[in-house]
Length: 422
Image 1 (cartoon, rainbow, N blue to C red):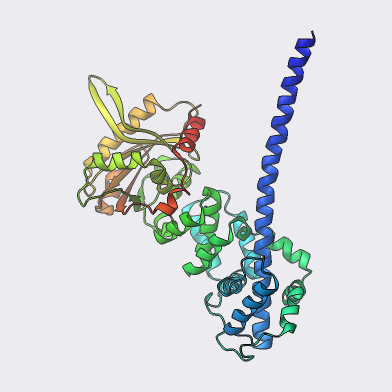
Image 2 (image 1 turned 90 degrees about the horizontal axis):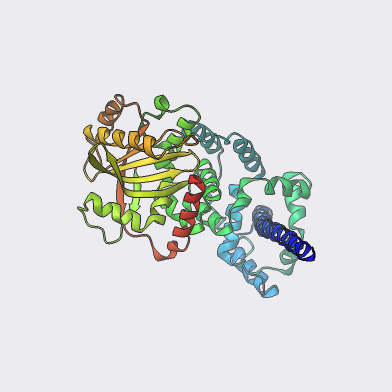
């Protein structure tokens, strides 16, 4: 009997320890997020304070340099107050005044079900907010190169100054700031966004994507440099999703697709065979899934199907967690040809029959071609009942070493896949 009690106690203690450990992990995440929000709010207030003194006292860029030296002299253990960073704080304050933080909050409530049309409308609304050029910091220096002790002492009055600027209690201002999307990404990512010179709507979209996909600042930079917004949102995509998939799945499928896709190849040549490209994509699957976007997991390459007395091999099969659907990909090194549709349609039918179960939505096909006429592709789609999208792809140089650590591991990809097929 005592052994049974001991066993029960051990099981109970194990459950308690697991529960405490889980709560501790969540608490640590919240503490990190809270610390990030506090730091960003501080930087935002400092930026407003400097802008206020520029306008009121005639401060210029040289004074900012001397302010940086004075702060670092008085607080040598505090990091982040270089001249460059103080200028970024000013840009940060300019980029996100209170009225824009409030507007971003309204937009966020309307983005529960993302679609291309919805994102375009909302980003355009944000783009209409006119702002001063973010890089424009006053170049005049009416007070010369000497910073007195009085302005340095005023650093303790930052919150009061911000309250005067916005005519609200600082606690209310802090609540509005910390409820906005800007606190969900880190300072390094904000610096990249400020340097990008993107309009407000696009900057907001990249912030939401960085949060949703867990991008590091390096990955964010890469996505901006490859113009992800244009490839995913403003591109004219070729698909039959609107007539072959029910809403809202059709909207989500169209939103997730890109044109063109940009794949990083190791040791690429101008004329790589389809099989070589497939091998590269699979051997560097984490980079490939990063380009595919949110929720994709790898299933198989050259998946063998025996149909009748014949053998067939599908190029690539993925699974998308958000769509709850298999995605069959056919890769062609040549421009689009209408006959490519028939082969992809065949593989979709086979996957529907052999892999798809009752919990999965309709299998989707993605035909990746090296160029081609989109008008011809759209006409070719009209004869097929299965949901299919046609996109171009481009091959670029290998991803820099400093980005590799930011990508998901193969183990993480496999874990995602196991969740979807359980």
